[in-house]
Structure formats: structure tokens, C-alpha cells
Length: 123
Length: 373
Image 1 (cartoon, rainbow over the protein chains, first blue to last red):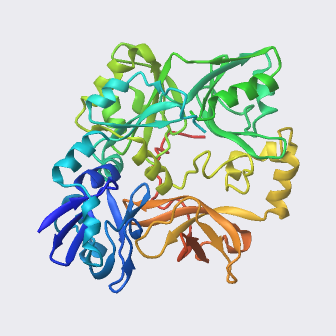
Image 2: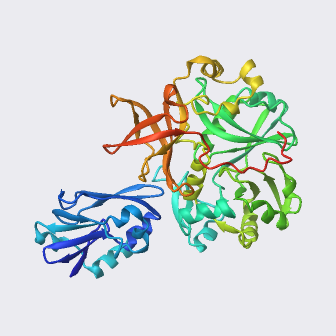
Image 3: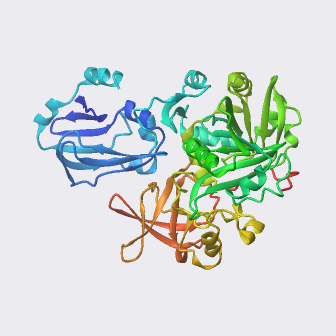
């Protein structure tokens, strides 16, 4: 399992041809208290950089983009009952959805953990 | 409204906020603390204990002169003639069409009036006042004065520890006090729906006052984020969002700010339109909305009719930490403005259902005892 990061602060943990997507700890810290997450339905096709979910904090709504293209195979319904999981476990139980990758070569353009850490320090 | 190229002004307590972990954001031309530990925690703290807000970006004005009362009545719909010493009123600056230039608090204080206006609009307000008031009436912008608000059910007992006698103030009254050797004007007022105080002190000494208040166990600093969610729950409109120059006081459901005498006699800008709206011609009105589900509906969402036509708009929307549900304020046609009416909204291509609700969403807890109006 390898984890990649986007400049829009999503993470994607890849295991074979499937992957789990969420937002990073940095992102949840910037958003503040999360009160609602709108998740994509299984079966939906998403494209790299396209809208995939919406995360709402007390103050504002933010789009979550698909780090790579693929088909949504599962949404994390635990977030419907407890959106604050995104604050408490953003890179664990607070994951958003799972994808079946349609083009694994799209992962090549993403950052690894160290590159992402450097990227956040510059924000 | 804020030009991003203009450097932000610094609050007198800037470093104090940063030392307490505040995230600072540009607002009304200042770097302002939006949150410390988190909006929901700060919001709840204010409703349960006492929150300390820095509102030094707001404009504090002194208006004095031989005919100040009469001259101000020509600009504001408040009944200043019956306003007693040390009493304050919520009022409005109005355009000739009855649109709202700003909302404000005005206090009779000795030989002058003391006015607090919004931070983002203060320069325009001062220019408007100077242009409209006669030369015999002078407007002094108290730039060297800071303003703090202490709000919440424990505000009175906490402040009374430092300022004996302050607990005797009734809601919407103020007086001169000493706090830690600093001369302060303190009024029992605020914009959170809670009992509380607003404390005007010289900017040069506000650090001492903040340190004194901040050292009380009941007190935590609260950011602009929770200030916004608190005032939304309290059903209080925010200038630039729920109020603007295209909106009249009757549309905004602020008829209480127009006293009986002024409504009958007129003599303030927009009177013809405003009095007609009181009687018959009102088309739309600000209401509270309880939004179904958990997803907040934000400012800018549209109110639609059964055919999908846009008939109104959401002007404030968010998540109520106390109700744990989305709430909003919107302008809707008067036919749909009664509590219980069903409203349909659109936001980012999605339809939402909402019910018109009485406001406040969370009951006010002002200190009414002894505060005869």
C-alpha cells in the first residue's frame, strides 16, 4: 500500500487496482469543525481533478477532488452519522470513498509523504 | 469590500491573539482572529460560560453639538428625545429610499451621543454623517479606543469581580467604570443573544484589560467564526449579508428599531416607503429557516417557487452548534414568511427543503431585570 497526496490536500492510499481517498490532516485543520460530508454514490465515474465530494465546516463548503480517475466502489457511510471523524481521524476512519483506478499512471504526478510535508510548510 | 492590495491594519491586541493560538484572517481591513481552538467549542463556551471578543475594528464615534439630538433624528429613525442618560438603542442609518446604510448602537452619554458602527462600513458612515449633519454638530472618530465584548451567562459575575457595581446595569444601559485602573465605558449589550457587556477602553491600555479578563477561569477568547454562528442562532442580522442599501428595515424585520412616534411623524430618510411597507406594500421579508437534513445552506442559495423560479435568497446560512442542525436567514415573499411555511431552496444544483422558523433559533438570555427601557 502506497500513499500519495495532491496539491488540493487529498490523500490516496493505493492497494493493487483499488484505492482509498480522504483529505489530509492539514486540510481538516484548515477547515475546522466538519459538520457534513456529501459522498459520491458507488458506480459513479470520477475523473482526475474533478469534483468527487463536498465537505462542509461550520463556516464554509469545500469541494473534494478525485486524485485520479476511476469508478467509486464504496463510500464511507460512517461520515454521514459522524462527520467529525474527518477532524479526529482524517487519514484513518475519516476516509471518504474507495475507487477502482482506471489509469494507474495518473498516480505518477502526485506527491509522496515527504514532498507533501514540504508543500504544506510552504502554504 | 476589502481591497486585497491594501495592507491589513493591526488590532491593538494582535500579538495577544496570536499568543493564544488564533488563526488570523483579513476582515474589514484588519487582521482579525477567526478562531482559537475551534468554532463549535468557542460557540458552546460562550453559551455556557463567558466569551471574550475583540471588536476593536468597529467604529466608535462621538457626536456632539448644540442640535445633535435633532440633527441625528433627521438621519436615524430612533426616538432620541426619550432616550435617557446612559441608555442605548439599536438604530439604522438610512438612504433616501429607506435602504440600510448601516446598523448601529447609539447611547446618550452626558452632553453627546456615543455611536458604535460596523468595522467594514465605518469610513462610509463617518463621511455620510459629516455630509448630512449641520456644521454645528461634530463627529469625532475615537480611533484610539479599543472595544471588547464579554458575553455569556457567567459574564456578569465575572466582570463584577473586577468592576464592582457593573452587575447593577440593566440590559441596554451603560456607564463609566474603572477596570484594573483603566477608565472604561461599559454597557450591558452585545450581539450573541446572551447576557453580556461591551467594554470601551483606550487602545493603549486594552492589553491590561484583556489580560485581566483573560485570567478569569470563566473566560476564553472567542473568534469571529463563533461570533457569526452565535449571532445567527440569536436571529440577529449581519450588515453586508442580511442588510444592505437595497433592503429596508421593514423587509429586514427590524421594525422595532423605528419608534412609534417616528413612524407616525416621519422626518427621517425613507419614511414614505417605510411607513407604506408597515401598512400594505411589503413584498418580501427576512425570515429564519430550519433546513432539513444536516447539510448547511449558505449565503447565496436561492429560494424557489413550485415552478423553480427564483423568488428570494439566503443571506446567512450555517450550522447551529446548539441545535446541531443547519439554520439560515433568507428573504422570502411575504406570503411565505409565516412560521411553519415550507420553503424550497437551491444550492449548487441541489434542492433543499426548509421550514420558516420564529427567531431567535436559540432563546435570548438578556438581563432584563432592572433594565427598564
